[in-house]
Length: 254
Image (tube, rainbow, N blue to C red):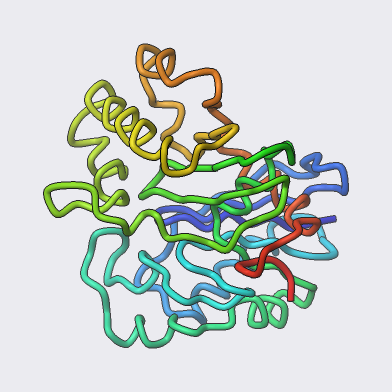
């Protein structure tokens, strides 16, 4: 039994799944608390686990650059009051180099695997055939790349500049979606897909995350047969398959 926790900028979601990836409990969700020192983060995860059936292991997806379970950079959890708010120097210092995998293993009392949240999402949807790119559209932009089912080292594509001083994270993040409305925001998503296509030359692109369902039918129809919308529940379901990922050094188990 696997406890799967999907950590987002605005919410923490969790459930327990069996070895086949079947949910054994209704997912639970709590708002991401801010400010969020690492000990409060661990307490929040333990609180979610306490409300679910007992599990044998845990998979936790965390936003940002995660290498071998250690947080290199995380964009939201170092801020004063959540996404787009001011970073707190003390939190930046505390989260940088935080061995989340070791800390969660100790706090939950079970073997734990910590990856970038988009990587866990991708584990739930990739087929293992060809080059598969996963982009998650939520608070910001998440990214995971798989080649023949093998997870590549993580790239923080969200921080790459786009235009007007915006990064991908802000260009198609949730704040812009709410400001622009679904139609104009969907056109931005199309421009991002068109810009990235010659960069990755993927065999399949998966668009997931909570905002993927907001993409307008007109834009979706023009994205091509190699672009697939996947449910946001993949961030939970991927918790089981993530343990079987072959990695190229950027994530996965130690």
